Length: 140
Image (cartoon, rainbow, N blue to C red; front, side, top):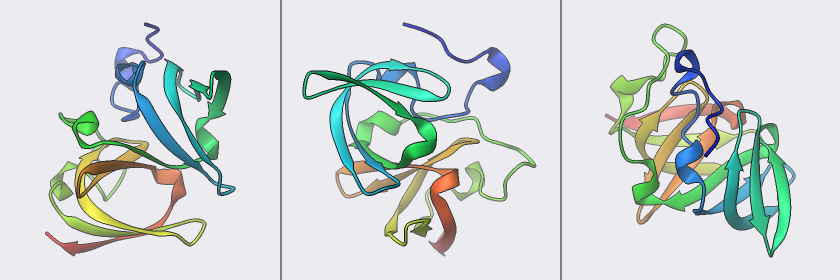
């Protein structure tokens, strides 16, 4: 397992080396849906096997990721004084408008400096902050 972050960068992303060997459904900014197994995780890219083809996905092309609800458990280190949306909002029901116009609703379960995790019935949605146009707190 490669560790792509130093101790100072810990907590930057929800999708880290713990996801190696797991299945992910990635939705890209251009509307494609990629489903495969994570082979390698790096700071700027994910290496996956999609239909037995090695595929490299730059993180900047990810609109959101769908995974199992249990995949985003645990605490994430966030961003004191860097973002308004921090750990204090965990448990809130939120409405998220994405940069492509899509809307995603769910319960905020994890927050890191670069990503937020939402629970939605039996799945988890990981959204890079760069893909969020705005996020409304519906209920705390």
